[in-house]
Image 1 (cartoon, rainbow, N blue to C red):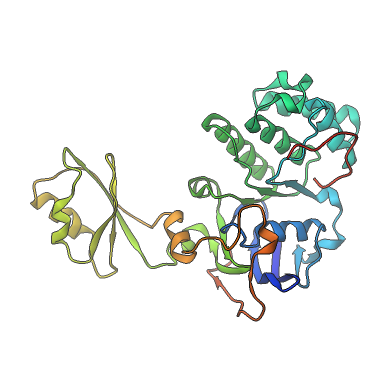
Image 2 (cartoon, rainbow, N blue to C red; image 1 turned 45 degrees about the vertical axis):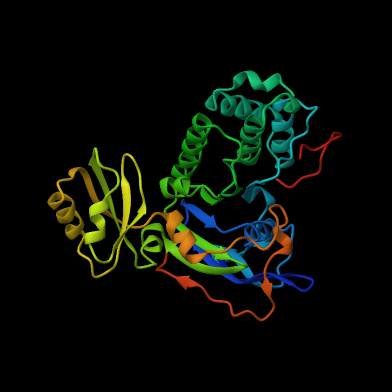
Length: 339
């Protein structure tokens, strides 16, 4: 394990924002950092970056305290946009890269290369205020990676992106992983996490609930699923004849059926065939990450979105969580930040 968060504690006055948070991220992995609003995700990232100081615990990279790492080691994509509306895209990408020590000629070359990679080379001369929210998000991603950081902390990177740009960003993140970068990804898009992340941590109210390889986290609830598709009959009325099975999520193309541990999946298929159903798809599967998340964190956030630092459990709440197996902040030029 290369990036380790060990027993992290943070208080804001009487509020316990982090209460013994722990997880480990293997090097050159995409790691899903999941939790409701107010769970402590942004606070953890800000501690890693040195913007906040922890009250207890530590963050290390290969055993070295994070406070001894150079700022250039980290790349940070905040949930809130921080672009300068009056600056052109190329100007501010070069500016942000320069703050991390990247020479101007190198920064210009990298910026144009990344813009072409994202299929928007024409953005170089446009001002940020002229771009849509989704395109501003792409530019902010580029600002986070221009200096070639080793570890990238990405807070809701897919916000505001359409399906085409989500695919482009996914490809870019996986390409960075293949180049040896470590990515900690916080998002509410569970399907994206399942598609990209090898390991995850689910956190709630400043504590780790479950963490480890994705496949084992998905099995942590003990639930089993049958994915079934039938032609012409989507009611699945015959399922009432199978004790221990229930229709969890009906669908026109495929329905999700939850079965108790003692139920043999084949009994669902046998009941369908006995009822004369025309089965076109049958699969035994783990529950989705969304279902696992709801199982572990089945309550609304304590606070409104955007005020995570105010959330937490009361001081004294036992810390813990289940470990399943090993598994740009900068000075600004003249201009107003885009909210």
